Amino acid sequence: MSMIRDLRAAVRPGLRHSLRKTPTTYTAYDPTRDHSASSAVVDCAVYRDGLRVEDRDCLTPRGAMRHVRESGGFAWIGLHEPTEAEFAVIAAEFGLHPLAVEDAVHAHQRPKLERYDDTLFTVFKTIHYVEHTELTATSEVVETGEVMCFTGPDFVITVRHGGQGSLRNLRHRLQGEPELLAKGPSAVLHAIADHVVDGYIAVADAVELDIDQLEIDVFSPATKGSTRGTDTGRIYQLKREVLEFKRAVTPLLRPMQLLSERPMRLVDPDIQKYFRDVADHLARVQEQVVGFDELLNSILQANLAQATVAQNEDMRKITSWAAIVAVPTAVCGVYGMNFDHMPELHWKYGYPMVLTGIIAVCFTIHRTLKRNGWL
Image 1 (tube, one colour):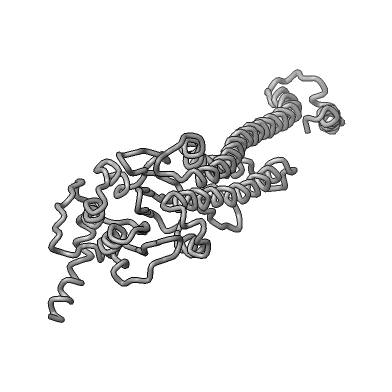
Image 2 (cartoon, one colour):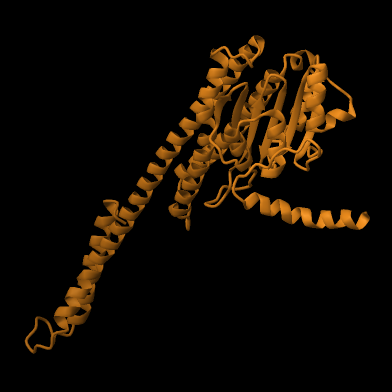
């Protein structure tokens, strides 16, 4: 038996890898086998009257749902990057719609709210700020992940993608507020939405500091040896990161407004009031992100204008020195012609006089151009 277990352990990682790359196929649920002990399940519990039910049968999705149907309450199942085969079992147990299941497995979805019969399917984009000592043209500023939430009358299923956005601390905090958790699955949905939006606020504050520093660097006097091209690369990189942030925030505003304004059978009326607060915070973040984008556009235009001015200054200097050098070039060119009869050619003081004249004219041109700001 130990050899069989070792063989299964060796084969399973390869099987998981191959299942991720195959087309979407949902295997039929076999009630005679307990598939629910999946490695993708992070936590599974049943809550009744706001308290977690301490029962070993509730530690698997199948056992948790059976307990809910017999004794009431609701089940909260948390998964992290499940494969198609793993999630197909849970989808069959809870009657989830195939379209929503496909979105939950493959991820890379746009934030949205959809209703399938008696189930709400919500997609959240999580944002994590990547710490960095200095913003460069290749710095990663924000890292995105996803949290999908299936909310039913007696269950909540959360599917998380990415290394960030863990809901473990959120679950522990909710378990410390049984009066709120007693409101049912919609309380969990609100807590997740509030948790995600709070993350947006923290990231927006950090990105604002990056933009302020970038603005200082761009408009500070250029030091010797500095180049404006590096500033342009940094601006473009930060604009790309802000655009990623914007794609997470803007599409989520409408779903939060729907949850706060439109009565829904799956959302407790008392919880619906809390969604208004989430929608307000999200609207503020959305305004910030749009402002970031516009401000970066202005900074980029100013930086390009500075680069153009610097190029014009360089051209003026080159032109000025070319005008100065043209004087000795012309004089030497004239006297370089091998004619016998040229002014002062055989005079004893002709050579010093010509050099003095060249120096005087060049000095006069130099002083004039410098006084006019060309040099």
